[in-house]
Length: 232
Image (tube, rainbow, N blue to C red; front, side, top):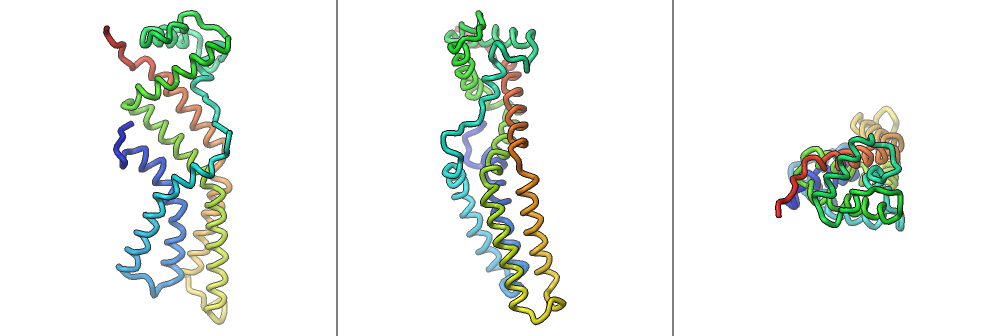
């Protein structure tokens, strides 16, 4: 993974959830207030919302459940008693890890002890640091990060869109004399907010994050074969 602020991970895993979270606000303003829809006002509104997207990742960290770290599936799959990865492949990974780093010599004699479990967790950290340029690992890491951030944003997303839907209804009813006079764009705005409410409720789930985390873990371990052994 490149350290550029606008790398693929930041754009897709961090910026995209922020845009999805705040996008309905801009849509509601544009649809309900036709008089405000101009080049200047649109640019100003978009700039404000884009600026707020910088705060969303900070808010995500604050809203993340305290003392609840997601399961380290990669370390779990490396453990001697786990059967997710076939034994032949796992033995090959053990041998490769023992050659990659001297501190991983314990992989030569795998056990089910707590010490070996700690060794697996240390190996996962090593893999994350040494597979940043692996395209497949990067792709799965982005998907996992996107799912995690979307799940954190879920409560806020539901609240925002419920408020926007109520605002659209109240504004439309109070502004126009009868229901038949309500413009189609206001109805469209209401429909979009209802869509996003359903999207957050049914489209963003813990199972989605769990599946993405497992795919990332499996890809990360498979990348062991691609790490070159350093020559002394």
